[in-house]
Amino acid sequence: MKIIFVSYYSLDNNSGMHIFNLANELTALGAECAAYTPGRPDAAKEHGEPLFRVYGSELSPQRLARLLSRNRDDFIVHLWTPRERPRRMAEPLAAALGAPLVVHMEDNEEDIFNSHIALRADVDADDEASWLPGGPLDGWSHPVRYREVLARAAGYTCVIDSLLDFKPAHVPGHVIRPSCGNEVFDVPPHSLPEEKVSLGIAPESPVLFYPGSMHFSNYVEICSLYSAACMLRKGGLPIRIIKHGHYCIALSDLLGSQGIEDCLTDLTDTAKSSDIPRIMRAVDYLVQPGVDNAFNHYRFPCKLPLFLASGRPVILPKSNLGRLLTHGKNCLLLENASDPVGEICSLLMLLINNPHLASAIGAAGREFAREYFSWRKTAESLHGFYGEILERHKHGLTGTAVAV
Image (cartoon, rainbow, N blue to C red; front, side, top):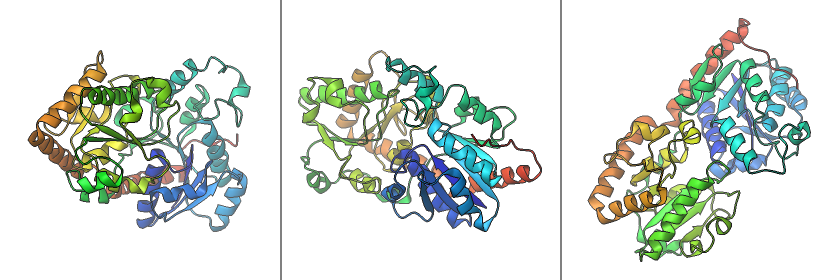
């Protein structure tokens, strides 16, 4: 079995972290894996040492197919996700290899596209030129073509059950549960003063951590987290947030004069994803901001397994994974959509003022993570799904990829 993951971006982000860990685990199970990316091929090393080859988009799909098929075997092309840029790479690759195409969904692509286009008055989504390579919509899912590629797919995977709503009825589906590395379970359950000092943070400062990117669908909720920190700091609490991720809009442009520079430690350009377990040693509390809406209902923030496995108390919305957790036992849930900033402040102060409660919630969250999050188990289940897709393909029961 040979699997080629086709990514919408280089692998140095959270989506790439999924591919990295699955490809490494699948390799350990005997599969031969590769990744095909429009970004830097060496970016996979942000997560550790890849056990698979990474090819860049300077290779055309047809040329890559000729290179790969020298050792012909049972190929699967896994399109990670159905956005235009990777779609133009994955479909002709699958066609050239005669391989079944599996499509992966991480988000409500329609909601993300609508949120983006609503803020881009300078872009005409009906103009086909906008969707051409290098065009302003090249990195998004086309509202018609993404549905067409789902209908042609041999299989459909997604990060959370709710995303099965987008699966065509005739296409087999499988949920790929995100996970985290075993090393996160080894992080001490409480912050270490010396780790804070190593990052230039005072030992007495309560520390939050937000790893992840900001885009047009989540910038409002991310701002609620930073606004809450600024509010608490103005109230006399020396709180700090460690940031690790690229943002579509500068925080200073979004938050104005709230004083974000006083509570921010930005490690985006100085730390790798593989450094996150070390960074966690300086962290006290973890917050995934947001509310239960069309965006959050259909996503699984991949930082949440990491958050829970770290043993820190986690605050998150009563949406997606939050619906499987219990408020006051293994998490604290956000439910007040009318005042998200005030609610984050209140729940953080509840944890700060009740250290025994914070420790108990963190410990219960870690136990939840031990039970539910394992890259090996996820890869074993996915390996079985791939086997089913290949059997269906051999019997002519799957769709046919187009050459584009």
